[in-house]
Image (cartoon, rainbow, N blue to C red; front, side, top):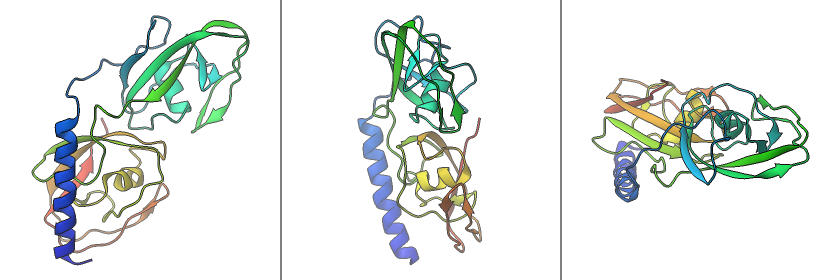
Length: 216
C-alpha cells in the first residue's frame, strides 16, 4: 500500500471518528456494583479493564448475588478491556447451570429468587476505526469479532492501523470486544508485524505517528 493511499484512508477514518464522537453521549457511567442485589431497574454501569474477580452462578442468566463484571465477561459481553454494560434485573429461576465460557468458569446453583442479564452498551462511546487526527488519547468501543482491516507493527502500531485489530493483537481485548483507550506517540523508523492472540499485523517502514494502548 502506498503512503498516499494510506494517508487518504487515515483522513477518512479520522473524519468518521470525529463524527462518531460528536454524536456520542459524553456522560460517564458509574462503576458497576459488585453484584446486582441492589439493582431494581435496568442500569448502565462500567466494568474496568480486567473485569474483576468474584463468584458467579449461572450461564447468561445469573443469580443476583453474582459478580456483575465477571458475569459480563463470562457472557462474552465484555473482554479484558472492560466496557459499559446494561444490567437488567429479573425474577427467580429454579436452577442456574454453570459453564465455562470465554475463559471463565461459573458455578451451578439451584433455586434463587432474583436474577440478572447483561448486554453491551456501546452507543455512548464511539466505535473504533483508526486514531482520529490530532488526538492524544482516544476512547472507543470494539464490538465482538472477527475484525476486518489492517494493522502495522507489534506495539506501537502505526496510527492508521485498525484499532480493533491492533487491540486484539496486543491482548487488551479478546474476540468478545470491549472498550479501549488509545494513546498517541511519535512515529518510528520501522514497524515489525507479528501474529499474536489470533491477530496478524504487518511490517512497515518509516511512519509519522504511532499508537499504543492504556493497560491501566
